[in-house]
Image (tube, rainbow, N blue to C red; front, top):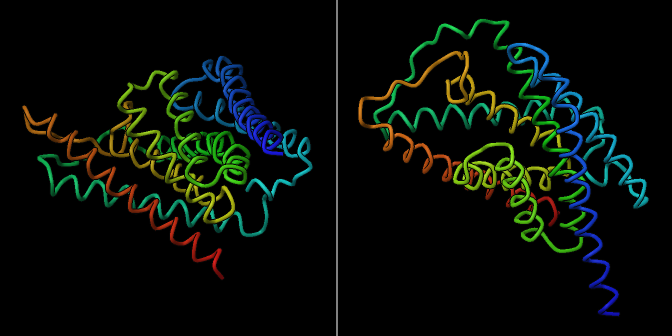
Length: 266
């Protein structure tokens, strides 16, 4: 009996990895289509097509296991838009708090940039929304729910976060940023998905955080603001920003964990 359980667990890990690799293959396949467009349109086109692909793969896998989309948090219902809006507002508040604390803790200021007109802002918002949708479906939907059910919360969270960081590393993100940025972010988004039993809130938080980082001029290209750092202080500004990020995301992850436990106890 124990041997059968071990086999089932290894098969579950295999299915989770297969799903995430499948989503990565879809992303790679549609990326050349998006690259034909200018400005932020490549992210919009690629994110939209990859999100549709990840959703389609979710349908295949849940039917394979005789589950429903609701079982993996991918069902769309009347409350989805409100949950998405709540997550986005929460994510914007994280960005605002991070920026304010950075000003207090380090020699950085935010100056108005010239490239953040309304069309650029709306295009960036659409891009980060569909990209967040794709990543939440690919990592915090079917794989996280499957692993959480069979292995428990922290194994599922750490396993998914490791693969999420690996995908970002393969996508060109530096090792430390993939570990500190993507992996820590994955823990927050995953906890939000499990606590709210859906993907709308983490999609909103994820999209708002990335959009906010773009608006602050931290993702290259045109933006609404730009950071102004005194000469010779860039390293200390980066360190302070990282520490604030870790403290903010860790606190938010803990809050979602407590909220999820409270909902389970009721």
